[in-house]
Image (cartoon, rainbow over all chains, first blue to last red; front, top):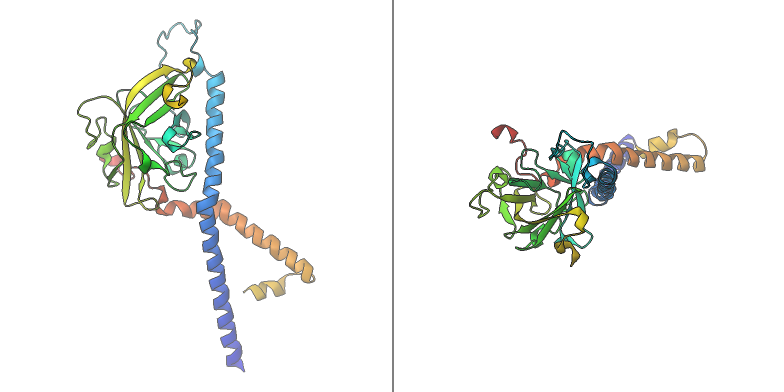
Length: 236
Length: 58
């Protein structure tokens, strides 16, 4: 009698435990595959909205001369603040509507809200290497189609005053996570042989793994003031 | 475990069912809001940079 009750209790508790763990795993998969995307999309929309607000009201959009600012004839562009958005990236290859905010820094929390600019690399459009990291999977999958990048593809970035059109120079390059030379001012293995205005994009490889990284390099091809409208690369 | 909880919930069957539902939803909310955001960065999907933990090298 007593043994029967004990056995039944053990079997029941064990099955309940299995059910609980199974439900937890299913919920976690839903969270990773679906919920992070929902959260990231709304976070990215929020960052894009903040940029639009700042550009429409702040001093950045003051393309017209600001006579009251007399001491700074060539006003120093504002420093990027960690975790704050400062630009919008467009990659037509990833879709006509593909537009993501670029935030300063590559901290985990920053990359959940958009693309992250490696803090110690060059500024947008400057000589050197403007390096940006983004999620390939989860958190809105911004770089999901990364392997489809081909030489000649435009990567257009706006900082509110200027459109910077970069052109991809090589098919995505696969490397190891420790290969920090790929974001050097003259990136290692990129084929560039001298200083220039470069762009580096990094994401994870394989798609769901972390054993490697996928790298794409581009050079600055053209710039145009925002006032002149969208650049040719985005109009087609 | 679940039987024990069920037996300790107050009220008749309908009240128990309602409380169970609320409890389940509360647990799902806690998981999505606090537990999963903590656990997810421990998985490899976040490693998209080439210099993680290598700041000191530079």
